Length: 591
Image (cartoon, rainbow, N blue to C red; front, side):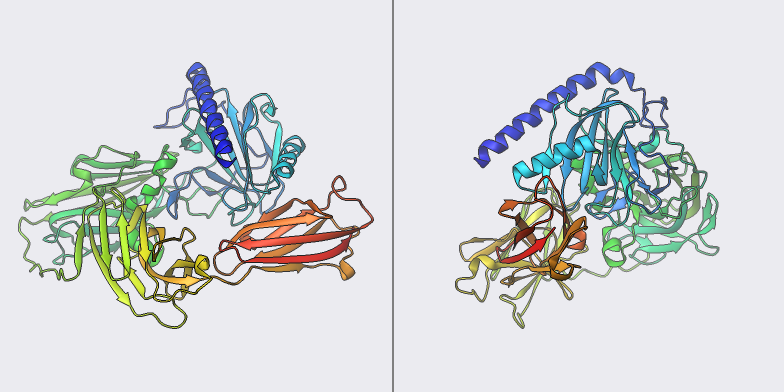
């Protein structure tokens, strides 16, 4: 039955893609948009909100493992702002989930684009009824729906939803995207006109200079140099007396951010250009990207600095396996070989989407031969793993497989083992280091030292980071080994989860008398493997409880069409974690 359902969904998605492509070809010429600059047609879309637009996040902003695919519009700290259709179109997808975009709408327009609205509080009455009926049919709060083209049709300016804070949202706002209709690739909404004021040039904070060979010398050392920048208002320089002398191959990085008028939120720059002497050797421009390539952010940034200090530094050179499309005018991957005893002028331009520019210029003294003594590297316990092939490692009780192209650069792989302590079921296996990013998941297999008889299916590999322990819920048994996938290197061990989730009523009235109240709230929480499912029934029938995952709360809105008002009711709530530990809560209430 599941296979049949999946096949139906796949066929539906393929058909929808074909229809979207046909429509895009027919009407695409109507969308006169240049993605290399500002919109040439400012009338394609109106604002999705009726309040002044202030941003808390912009397109291409640097996030954990991804680029931000839209703009985050402030809603004045409130939930429930009216969201309107920015152009004529129809709803082609509705998503409701406890995380991610939460409650989200997707609208197809006849101008070659679609728009997305995330973290909504609720939909308009028509869409809300449509969604609720299908949630009850599927007996699930989480749904992914694909209405027919003629079911939910709206004109420009029609009310479609209300802004909120659902899903993985850190506060009330509207996440808004514009996508290409044929590919669903997000494009920068600020290339269109939304009357957002910005005359502030990007802020440049720090320059990074990286040695890109073992023989490279930067100011006499084979290590990264960091320089806090002086200046402001679009013109920056390195501090007085900070001479830069380089011998060998080197690359640059920049720590910067952008501000918009009337907002203190730090946004990302739109473009970065590196010029040495009079030649551009690297350019980055965030006009659009594909969701398939968004994880390349981990090669675009200085990942080690991010892991160690949570600071984003953007490279102006490209790692060998970085396939991000946002680069252009690249010569030798943005790497420059300083080897000619000349002085070179280095210029960095950092622009925002409205054309405000900041410039950093400085000179580099190039030295043909380095005078540094290159210390021989200790290759003991080092395994060189090329990025462009599958790599495998095996030691006592552990196996690691890294797929082809999972690395961005050749890795000097190291392994160590720490003897188990306390309640651990295996030694801790130190597999490379968290400072090295993975583009694809690698596979880790660990043979436990201890197996809890009868509890084998509740055992799992866990990631150990200091005092933090995170389960790899993909763990399965393969013979004597537990096997799981992970998208980060680090320390791994074997643990077990035998503790059921907790269920806690929140602010229940005396004698559970909810008369006159609008909702019932219950906290469901699991301390280790996480909540897998919850099954609520009122009077023996499935009931719709919204799940606010970030706050561990489920909420039931009392519904006279589902339960009889003014009577006693029974509630049975069963909550399971990802290792199938189950807790059941039973109570009676009046409403």
